[in-house]
Length: 457
Image (cartoon, rainbow, N blue to C red; front, side, top):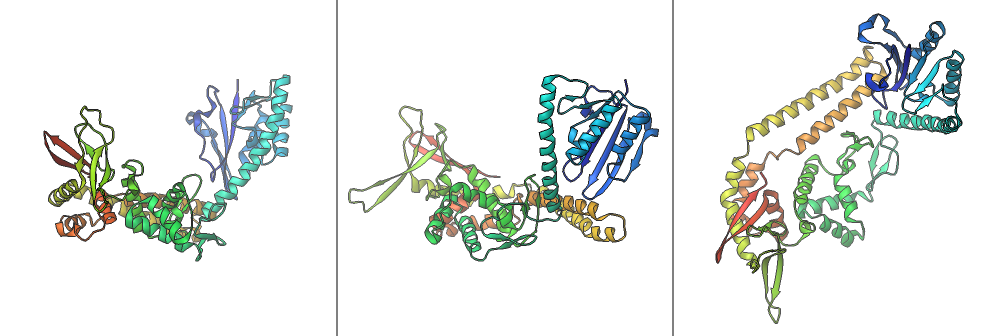
């Protein structure tokens, strides 16, 4: 039993198929057409033991034509395809080639669609009618995806409305001067106070711009505001248009989001600096901040109380100010040692490796126009290579951004001075404490208690 197989791959949309896609079929020859936008290359892929049968071509669907020619001179029993739509660029071409194979007495099998031309039942005919509609839909879908892929190669924005703060230009996003200040102030508020809900409320008060917390989170993580373009396939190209925030601000936003993700819900926007950080070591319960006022409400007392203490009697509340003072004292004495314990040489090596790799990729990217001029690369292949390099550079820059900041040691030294905390507002204290502290544990000892601080590094 002789079996031929044919595949058609648009390299802008997919990768070349693996050799095991045919399952249990023992394929004698595989004909493969490869398309790169308007330029096309093709080759015949055969088992490694029979390299003498390898062939190549550059004409449009040259290997499909070779398959049909070989079927006339030495017809196989079966011809396999992944999907019927691969036999042509439109429904008429597909139908013509199906009829040609049927006339030669060859059974056509579409392995991913369950189609077998040797079967001729009523159900199969009904299924084939549905299959015709699928072929038409797939061809239309392919044309749309090809257009989107060509836009990606040109680093053009994806289809759809431009994000708030931008408007669509001819080939890239351009800043909307009327709405961009809203976005800028939103980011600055978040960077100052580290509170997403607070930044959302700030927009409502200053601009009467009402957005949900979910929308605010989407703004903070949207690569567009950082000057990058993200596509539906998850790939990102850096520096495609003017940014609203700098790369340094974007890295700080990411650190704040990672820090806030470790806190209980709504604690990130709580006014008190210790909110969401304190845990009772004895009962393992998070502690909430409660306030008590005097009868005339001229004074307010703050306490830390376990939320879900299982013990009887329950763990008692502790004065908030005493916990805060001890926290600052421990930070001043232990933070420099904790920062010094970070494996700085390893971090420096990682940063240098990433920086060197980014530089190398950028050098290759700069060489592409010269390779096109000398004829080593054609224009379409150069576009694909440049696109892949730019996405790889963006990925490396993202890895570099999540590493600890270079000035971590100097910041730790400043924070370790007791006088540093005296002039800070509550929100500023909250910012710095959450920048370094993962958790504060209250360890009770009879009537006394002590603090144990877990730093984030």
